[in-house]
Image 1 (cartoon, rainbow, N blue to C red):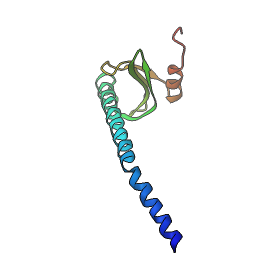
Image 2: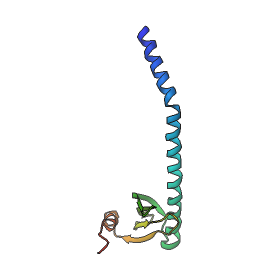
Image 3: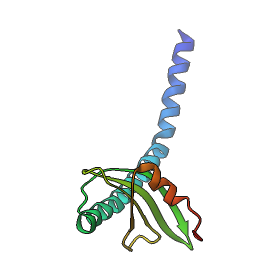
Image 4: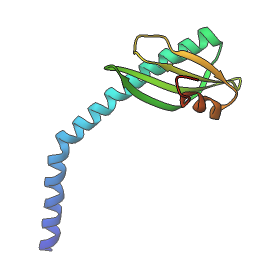
Length: 116
């Protein structure tokens, strides 16, 4: 019986200490999700206005930093079956959009050397 109380006390102390850390982690996660939602909204609006594409999925997302600016590249699948590779190198810029024959082709575009 004594060891059960000590174990319960250990877990209670451990979870109590994790409270602020868990709150910080959840706060950072929420901020990340909010930032992600903003770029996704930008991309979906641009796809609808420029390509008449209702995005049904956004995949192969890669976030990067160039010259201190956050960039993103992703593959967009449209409701009508088209695929686009979308990328931008600054948060307030429009996405560059390139149509692909399929998802694999979009990923290949992203990995092509700049000289090609």
